[in-house]
Length: 262
Image 1 (spheres, rainbow, N blue to C red):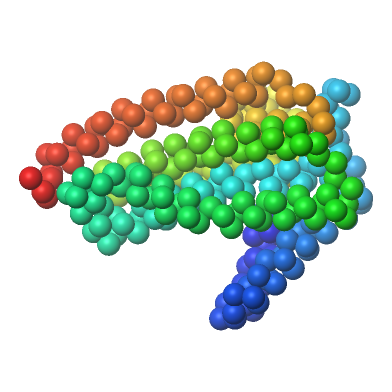
Image 2: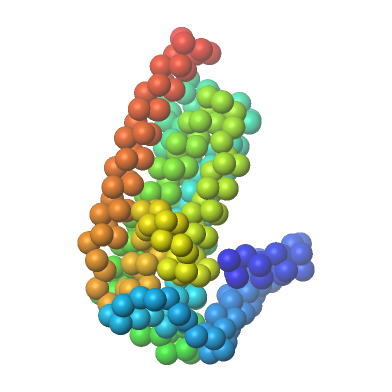
């Protein structure tokens, strides 16, 4: 994402600076991100092959591609990071022995970290609304954040499944990041999936990332979201929640057999 690229550039400059300097870095980074999106949308034309009723501006397309997955991905990555931390520090089984749920523990720490990506999304929306004429009604804003909640639930379940796999097999984190990047790319974060051959497009349409991006773009264009998008997202949530439940029971059984505590 564009914000990530600017972050890499400025982070070396502000690594050892004060909190105020880091805040200035965030503002500069986000402002440049919005500027790149705006001027790119002014320079090129978006051709998606969509029906007229789903015509999107390039500005909306790029903006949603930048912000729609920031919070869900950041939250799931923090879940994984905190899980790896307690696992590597041998704190996981300590929590189990103390009858404290490791899942709730890492969720609590991830929630504490979630304020920063949320503020990042709000600042980008604020800049676009105040200076670039973005018009987003209160209802559409609620729908967008409702989609963000669904996306966060989905990504969190995927992260928890990865945690269970890592707990049992000591691997899976790299695969999680690889699959997320692949799904985001063919899901349309950078370009519309309509440009793909029909077989790849049909596969892409069944991915939750595709539907999250597509539904968010329709909301930002003040258009109604089809029930298909919600159905695909909810189906993935239920499917992955079922997989997590089965794996969790299996891992709990395995833990009892290898318990360090009576």
